[in-house]
Length: 496
Image 1 (cartoon, one colour):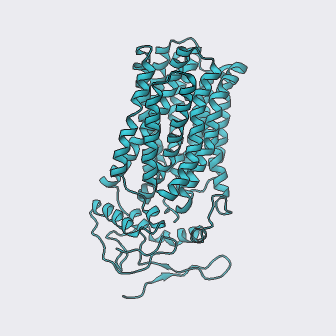
Image 2 (cartoon, one colour):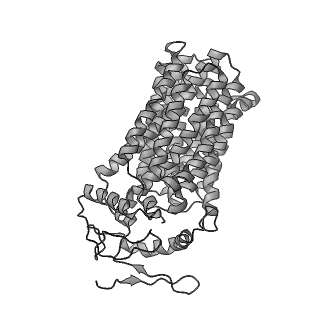
Image 3 (cartoon, helix red, strand yellow):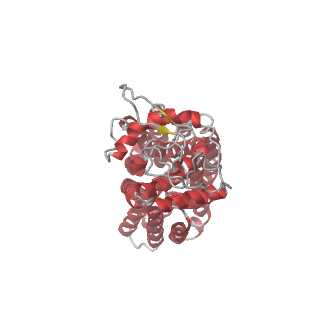
C-alpha cells in the first residue's frame, strides 16, 4: 500500500500537531458526504413521529387542565402544580436520559422512554384523584424529558454535514404536528363529554405501541457504536446509508482513521472517497485544527461539558434553554386557561388555541430554510427577538382578532427558535459527551418549565396579562443575547 499524504499542522505553541491523513475517511466523514436519501428520510420520519407524539402529550395537558380543574373544582395554584409536576419529571428525565444514552445507546433510550410516557399517559386517564393524576404526570414527564435530546442527537449524528441543521429543524417541526394533534383533540374530544379529558389521555397510549417500531427499525448511532468498540455494526450501518445513496461499498485497505474518530476505518479505499467526491476538503484541515483539542481530551477520557474549551458554550446554551422554557411553557400551557379567564367559553378558547397553533408549521419551515442560509446563531437570535416582540404584543391584545394575530406571531417565532436551538445543541459537543451536553441543557431548562406554570397565577394576580407576557418578552430577549455568544458551526463536521 502506498504511503498516505498528510497535512502537517503546527500547534499554537509551535510544536508539531498530529498529521492529518488525506486518504482515509472516518465513518462519520463518509456519512457527512452523502446526499439526502430515503434512508435519511426513514430515520427522520421515524424519529419525528416519536417527537410528534411527545408534543401531543405535552400539548394535551394544556387542554386537559381546563377540564380537570372543572371536574375536581381545583384552584389555579393546584392546576399549576399539575403542569409543573410533569416538568419536574422532564427535568430529571432530560438530565438522566442524555447521560444514559451516552452509555447504552441512543435507540435504546428512545424506545424505552416512548414506552414509559405512553403507558403512564394511558393509565392517567383512569385517575380517581388529583394525587394519582399528579404522580402519573411525573412519570410521563420522565419519559418525555429523556426522549427529546436523545432523538435530536441521533438525527444529527446521521445527517449529512451540508444539511445537518436543516434536518434537525425538520425533526423539531414534528413538534408542531403533535401540538396540532393535541389542539384538535382538545377542541373536539375534551369538550365532548364530562369524561372527554379521559378519552383524550387514553389516546396518549399510542407512543407505547410506536416504541416497538422504533426499537426494530431505527439505526443506532455510528459514533456511539464506535465509541463502544462495536466497529462491525458501525460499518454495516454506514454501508446501508451508502447503498441507499447508490455509493458502492469501498474496498478495505487497512488505512488508519483520522485520530479521535473511534479507531480504524475498514471499508475505505486508498482514494478515500467512499465513492463520492468531497468539495469540502479545503475546510477539513481548519476544522481538524479547531476540533483537535477536544478530541485529545475525549481520547484521554477527561472531556467535560464544563472543560475550558466548552464551558462558555455550555453557559450560553443553558441560559437559552432556561429562558425559552420559561416563556414557552408559561405561555402555551396557560393560554387556553387564560382565555377562559378572559371570558371566552371553553370551546371558543380551544378554537383560538387551535388557530394559534397552526402558525407553528410555517415558523419551523422558515427556520429550516434560514438555518443553512444565515447560519445557526443568526437564525436562533432573530427568531428569539421576534418571540420577544410577539410576547409583548400578546400581553397588550384584548380582542379575539388581536389575540389570534399576536398568538400566531408568537407561535411562528417561538417554534422556529426551538427548531434552531435543537439544531445547535448537538453540534456544540464531542461524541463522548454529546448526549450528556444536550440532555443537561434540556434538564436545566426544565427547571424553568417547572416554575413557569406556578409563576403565571402569581403574575396574573399582580399585573394581569400585561405583566405575564412582559416577563416572557424579557426572558426571550435574554435568550437572544445568549444566542449571539454561541459559535457559528454551520457546515462543520461534528467533533468526535
